[in-house]
Length: 262
Image (cartoon, rainbow, N blue to C red; front, side, top):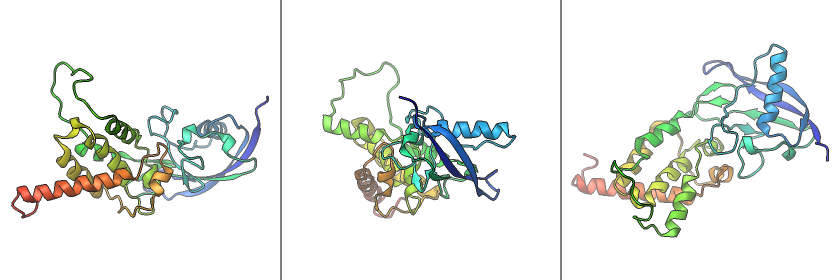
């Protein structure tokens, strides 16, 4: 069976630099195979732009397998596009119809400054992880895999939280540009495991504080973050993060004699 070909009109946000004024520009994507991924389609558009002596469209990408979390932008107002549980690099052109007009723009958030075109700086997420997303472990020989018994339900929950790839779609989809789903997934992953108990309270306090310091907004629990997440991270993680943070805050006050962080 021959590949089906479609033609598309792309309205792409172009911005030469972080301090430059951006605007939408229109491009034609012709004879696009429906078997191609979205990023492969953009590669073709860029090849044509380069041939004409124009600057190619800049966008983040790396593994192109939906694992690294590098790629990501809005397609017609949807983070990663119209297909649920899919990153842009996993999105195939068969999800679109011949003649469609697609609007491509970067993640919009104060904490995600635009670098160029569709590429934003998401290092704020890295700094949240650096503030507390680690455990204490003895150096030397590794422990036997079964030396610490973990109930399967807990292990499954921890694994589901750990599948977060940090793409930033949750932030871009939230009307307040909140990073609660991302931060809570990273806190939950370790809070559910015995290996994460040593730094549990310090982790919750530090990661939430860093999230706020980065300029992310407040969570209103509308669920847009989870709905747009390519890895289906659950909102229950946010509830767990809130519990961990509250518990850590109460214990911190008790240790300081009720006078705050002191």
